[in-house]
Length: 189
Ligand SMILES: [Fe+2]
Ligand SMILES: [Fe+2]
Image 1 (cartoon, rainbow, N blue to C red):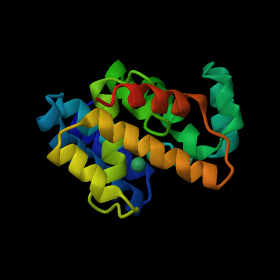
Image 2: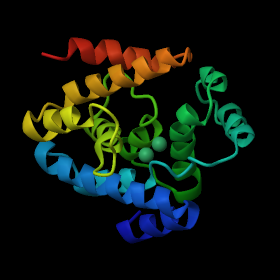
Image 3: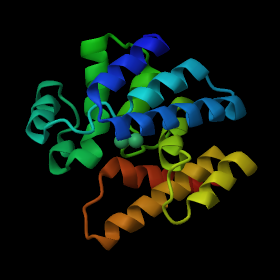
Image 4: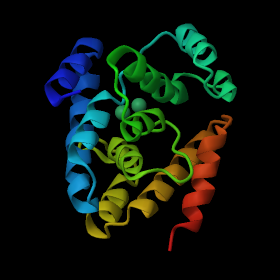
C-alpha cells in the first residue's frame, strides 16, 4: 500500500481526532526511523494504520479472534488490547498488506511483546510519545529516544509505566505485555 491510499483508508475509518493522532504517530515514527535506521515507508504505513480497529465492535473483534485463530487469551481482554491484533488481521485480509514487519507493528502496538522487530518497537514507542501526548513521564521517554537513542530502554520504560497503571486499576495483564517487560528489562544495558 502507498502512503496516499493508507491516509485515505485511515481518514475514512477513524474519527478526526484519532486520525490526527495516527498522523502524528506516523510522523514521529518516520523521524525515529532516521535515528534507528529503519524503513521510513513501513514506519509511516504502520503508524497511519495502527489504530484502524480502535472503535470496532467488541463482539465482532471476539469473532475475529476465533475465526482467525488468534491467541485465545485475547478473549479475556477488551478493545485496549484487541484493537492491535484485529487491525493487523484486517490489513492483511481486507487491504492485502503482506509485509510482516508492518503487520507485527500494528498487531503489537497495544501490548508489546518480547523480541520485537525494529518497526514494531518504533510504532510502540511513537504511539506513546507523539507530540500531543502529555502523560506523566512522557518527556523522560522522549529524552531516552531522541537524546540517548536507546529504543529498548524506551520500550522497557513504557511497558513498566503501562503495567503500573494496570496494576493500580487491578486489571489483569496480557501475557505478551509481561513477557515484554521481562525481555526488555534484560536488554536494558
Ligand atoms: Fe492503539
Ligand atoms: Fe494510537
